[in-house]
Every structure is written in structure tokens, then in C-alpha cells.
Length: 154
Image (cartoon, rainbow, N blue to C red):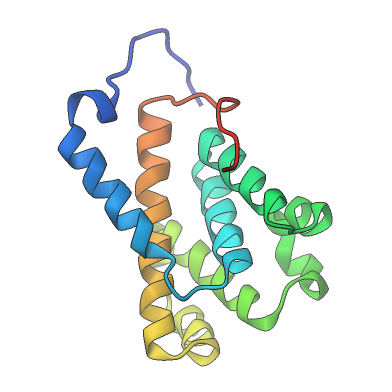
């Protein structure tokens, strides 16, 4: 990863309508999804995208809401630590990886099917929206170089 000293535009400041639209989408992106599962999805996508700000935010939120250090520490290697995650969480993490790395395999049928078997259609659509949303936020965080360390859970 290259770093730069070039000043980056703040989307919230210079495109406030767009930023507020992202916030509004974010507010509905996890409706009906278990909060622990939603945090795991956001954490895993942020790990894959290298978004330090979002990773900091969502691990803090997950801890604040009672998830364990062990689960949070192992999420990057969830396949080797399956006993710490429910089948539904594993299916969500599988889909998160496929959708986040969409340019690699274009969400293969077998990975999609794992999620389709674990969630009903409404839940699956909502999960896909959540994954799309965190990927959008990761792109904002990485592109604008938003620094971690300033967020605190509400």
C-alpha cells in the first residue's frame, strides 16, 4: 500500500448530499440482521479492503455490544476457527468474502448457495445490502484516508 501526503477531499464536507444518502442507506442496511452477525460482516469486509477506520469502528462496536475478543480476533481466519461461529455466521462470512472480492470469481454459485441455504430470501437480500454498504464505506475510508482512533461506540 502506498501512502501519500497529498490532502484528500472529505466527502462529508464537499458532497454532503451524497454522504447523507450513504448514512441513510447504512441505517437500513442491517435491518432484521442479528447485530453480532452484522458486525462480523462489517469487520471481515473491512479486513479484506484494508480499511483501518471501519475495522476500528466495527470491532469497537462489536466489543461494546458484547461480542468476545476471541471471536473478533479470529474472524480473519474463521474457516480454521469454525467452532466459534454459527453456521449462519459462516455462511454470511463466505458471502461477504465473495461479494467483497467480486473481481476474483464474480460470486460463485456454490458460495451464493451456502448463504441461500442459511437465510430466507428476505434475510439474504438484507445481508447482501449490508455487504454492499460496508464495501461502499470501506471505499470512502480508504480513498479519503480516514484515520482510525477517533471513533467511540455510542
